[in-house]
Image 1 (cartoon, helix red, strand yellow):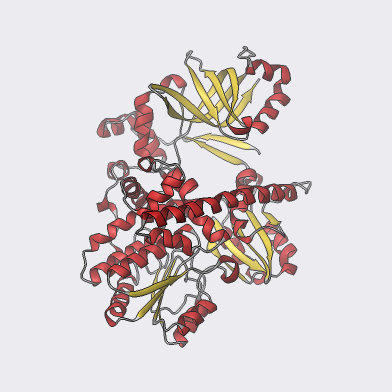
Image 2: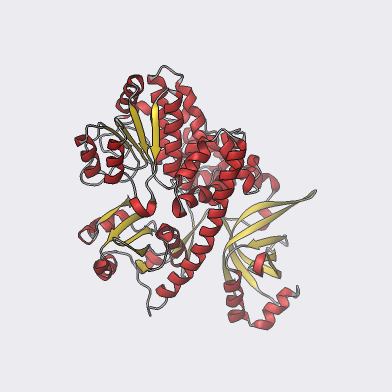
Length: 580
């Protein structure tokens, strides 16, 4: 894949910033690179606190939703929460269940089954609720596109409260209260909340309406943090505050489900960070919604029994391991189909007939990462084709699917991800139209590597690496800082890890500073590139620590390797450019 390395050139008085906050000029530059232009914004960034969270009363219909729920609680009416089968939906369901139960509600919940029901509120769930004597339906992380379903629920005499965060379509459901910060007439100052964070905001108002301390809802910030990271929301503004405060709460939590999930995965709870949420705990919760029913994930979060929680967490881990194996096979099949064509499409649309439909989005994400192109993976179901897509920053998948909506039965999502279904006979036409209308240039398809600064190994120190932790949590919108250095001399290479697919290099900069450099990418591909460029004898010599005159430019981030009583600076390589 063609790469384009670009160093950010934002200017500011870095020395003044560093002196004001007692930080290095490197860290000052990193804040400016992240769009922070004044001392107040920088102070909030460096010192996130509960006072930075916005008032939930500013969110359109949030107060009305809380009043409705309070009335139903007082009247003893039956409330049913309809969530979603991903982490965001599971956590949002848990937040509402916990809050409403504490307020004395007659409440239960349902999570749609991915294969049988599809996404969100559907007519079967509405009919079931009516048959069960449900008075009020409360949606979370879904409902904004459920125009027909909400209308049917109203015809059945039910009250409907919708809470969601997804993109708005042309027509909105006629719910009794519709809470979504993306509404044009919503004055809430931050629009990028996930579904669970919206639930957290509404829960805070429900507590207040029911005469309880609204501060009780602060315990939910830990779970809103989990959902924010796992739903890949921007870690900017209020989201970054939620995740920062939430991680602190999670590290000290006595919650049975969180403790059990950390335990079965061998994670020290005090070491929880955004990476472990997004790539270890989150996938376990997601796996049950993909391969079984997501209600198991809600049950884990609601559990008060440690033995029960450990048992459920263990099952979630097993399901995630099965999901991982199935995903690997699906990715391999998808790559083969993509590369059958002489020239790659600008928008990759792959039809995997035998793929489990719950894995389509994961596989699409892997294709996007591999080829830096929007990718959609479809599979065959009883009702036709169904699938998910993952996009790049240059391409709004939701917008482009909207342009092709006459070919689709259903679709929904946001710029970076979407779900869709269509008749199989429309498949080829969809492929053609998405590519014809994509508007992507060759420059858009080049992988752009944004570099914070050029920094020699000599400029690294333990204090700097430790200072960089103040910029956490890292994730989408607040990426881990990366630096570049040119012309590093390569002294030796060692294959490490399972299958010898990773490397440890010993490198030296122009000032004579030597340091270990770790590479966790596809080691097999990297070795093939080196052999093609330098020959087998050179690569063999590097394995034997011989000076073969090989030099490399790298994009890296620094870290500290702590082993027993020894601490060493090291760099982790993200991109390598070989030099002659």
